[in-house]
Image (cartoon, rainbow, N blue to C red):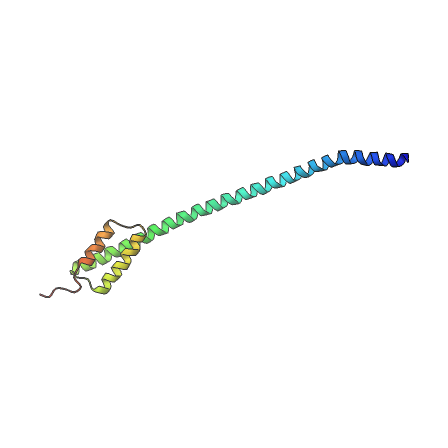
Length: 128
């Protein structure tokens, strides 16, 4: 019976000592894994923010470039038709589509005045 009692006491003592040690070691190992996970998540978030910034810069550049091209096309149409003194309907429609795109991309000012000049021109040349 003494050996049974001794085994119970030894088991109890081992459990009392081993359990907190095992729990501590597991928490420490888990904490390190969480730190690594958090670090990876933060790195991924930083990469995502950088990508979003690059995309925003690219969109601004593309929008600005397209707006400049549309303004140039309006200028070309304006110069061509004001020199002639008239503008046929299909060219006015083209100028309108070009201006609407230009305006929706943030263009205004000189483009608006060029568009208004084109729209004010007669559809056919004046007969003399």
